Length: 285
Ligand code: HH2
Image (cartoon, rainbow, N blue to C red; front, side, top):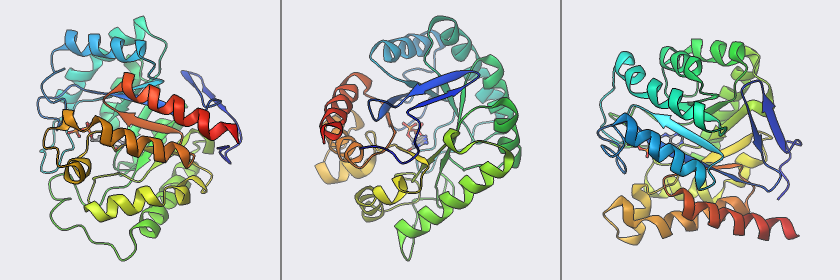
């Protein structure tokens, strides 16, 4: 499906994304001891680098590196510790691959260190709650991903409430995207994300996915992260995140059909195939 943003290639001084085939895949690399799916697997720098290289080889268009779990109930990680975890991984990957790296953080200090190390995109799950983040993205001329969350990771799943989840999340993201434009970030470098699982019940997540077209028609490119999340486990009765790959695939295919631009996933090889087939079906007519 043609996205109404116009340009199929988004280019900036440190990177480039090609949307001419449709949606692209962002691979997740959590350098954390406690992430809900891959926690502890890539805390070791060498293992993290190997996994980043593997995902690039499998066709990831972006590698998203984070050092702080945002799973429900997770505790914050200090800026120094986040920087200590991510910088060597980013430096090593940038020497070996062209794939742009995004830094998953809500701290402008961490983002700054990551950009100096070679990261090329800021993924902010708090949508510029730190005002310095907007200035930094504008100064450094990098794209930003703005995500919606109700509450904080420590509290967000206690009792999420909305009158109309789709219009409230959409309104929030439009406001944040406009704010990002005021900082001087061009529209084509702003990505919006409804924040699946961040202060949302099963029904809220399903309503957002069912109505994802309402985000696509804003004119901002849309990113969706459903990968292995607990709502998929609830529907499929799969307790272990690693058993949720087919459930993830269903959500990815349906989102691609509605014109989203990026899917954030753990299982890059599998989802690259899902996205290729979905892109091909969408672009035929
Ligand atoms: N989900 C997670 C983390 N960062 N960023 C964006 N833009 N969108 C998302 O949906 C999103 C995100 C949570 O997943 P994961 O990184 O695998 O787990 P954890 O937060 O436990 O590290």
